[in-house]
Image 1: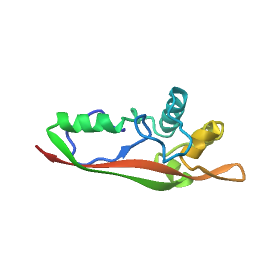
Image 2: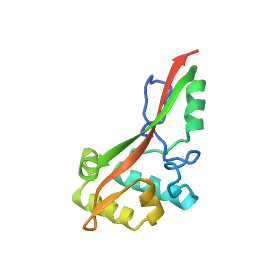
Image 3: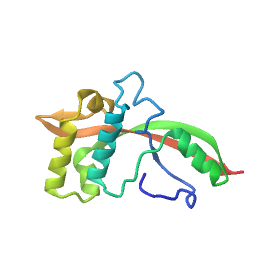
Image 4: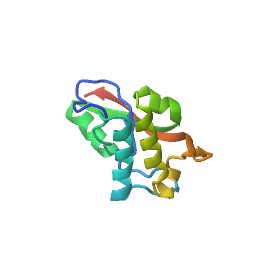
Length: 138
């Protein structure tokens, strides 16, 4: 999440890298405490404005507290090209290299959970899992 107050918005994209939902089907689980810290650490290295990843149940509670009721929920996967993903946050060359080394050093089950595509020792892409919620005013 990249903002501290969700009540002001009416649309949002939720990254489901938080515990409470499997990474993807029966793939290896990177949701133990160390895996969660590693995932958040990677996101913060790319974008320091990243606050944390909330669980789906927490998002529902936030919306409820804002007077909204979730009426539809779906999840989706999106393949992210590594160079584009890191360029959009204006990472330095050194920062990108540090992030890539951090990801490549992660346990294989964590890389597999995000379907990292690696060629010649370099990251090409990965798959992001998103939760889409549609909510209406009560």
